[in-house]
Image (cartoon, rainbow, N blue to C red):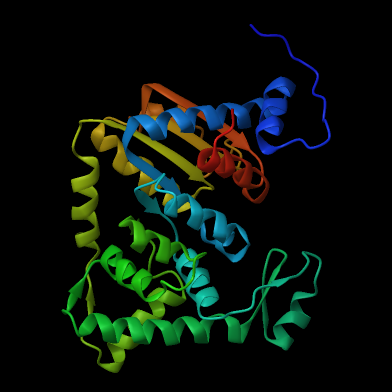
Length: 310
């Protein structure tokens, strides 16, 4: 075993040095963060299937640009996320103003002023739903002009091509890189509801998620090569990734970034070791959990993946 070493914060310290400092500190999550970077660097280099999952709340923050960079940098070739991520990515592309707020705000007063609160992010009503609806109307009309039936991932590829001017858009980055984006809970937000309303208006478009599942089968059923995943947060995007990974014998590399606890039996809080029991992560895998707010931890991880640390 290595000894714990004292960290010295020298003037001009760079991110690389900070990560080395985390490695020296070791306790309590510092060592996990440093190890997560090592696992991901090895896993992404070795793997043919490279999965990124995240939850929609993060896209309401400035972390949106970091997530887009991870995709644009060619590090990941499969993305799982939630309906909220689509809503926030589209709304911000459309010019929606997401504002710095505070957790302690009076929600009744915000409601009366027409402001949604997402944690300490304030979203004016006009910066959200109406913008998503306007974009989806354009998307549905464009899609209907091509063909009638679409998978969700296919619609999202088309959506990303319409968002090309936004360098911080997750969907635009995925479209540029040819990365498939899967959203199993796609009806659970403004994007899905807006698509339904366009169908009700008479736009001839049908969404068939079985097309997404067929594409996922093409990606995950082949056994050759290894698979790695960076799973940020929990919920359906986390589970969909590890669920499909079982069909190739499980992930070879897995990093969880989370604030959820496991004692209540939740999927969001479940450790990689629990996924081993289901065959979703391999017994022989390299795996680590980083407990912490992703808006703090993910930029450090992302920097090292994009630019190298050591």
